[in-house]
Image 1 (cartoon, protein in one colour):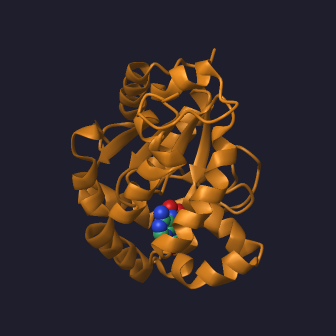
Image 2: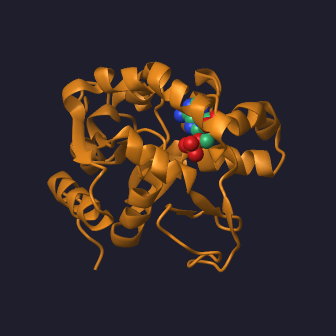
Length: 240
Ligand code: AMP
């Protein structure tokens, strides 16, 4: 039996799973550093049945726990450079399947960041996943990005991010201490921006007409409304 994309239906796979093949399973958040991906992800987590899959958080945890992978990637994660496609693709492949098992939509934050990664994602699960992926492009001006990044803070305990408008010293979610994000120092920011221009911007061209654009320069409330509209279009219902 063949599924929607023409690939062979796996043994033990139910017909309903095959019928579900076009349903939205993954939403990619694409945008420059400081576009507000973390804030949008938090809004979606608070309001929709979604799970957050952030490759940056995943790698920072590995570094913090001093695992083999953490030691392998710590230089890049700390300096704003990108981890190699081979490593990050392997990390995504081994962690994403588990995350996809539930009914929740998976929010992909920080991946893909290169055309090679975008192609790898489209090929996952023998290409059957491709049809279930939607891509949101957060369009934001460079002056807004600079203002946001120079004041970005993070909770040292739970990792929640807070914007430059948040004047707080204690995390509103867990009470942890708020610190400046380690990879937001100026030299690191420059490197991140260059990586973005050279490696990540071509991803927009790769996705072409698959991109759904939202204005990331708007007020947080307006951005939230736009994201809600996009999610309604995806057929994802708001949590009651
Ligand atoms: P982020 O929090 O998404 O900005 O990620 C923090 C750091 O993790 C980046 O500066 C990279 O070193 C690494 N990283 C995260 N995601 C990726 C990715 N998709 N490709 C390569 N490196 C990544």
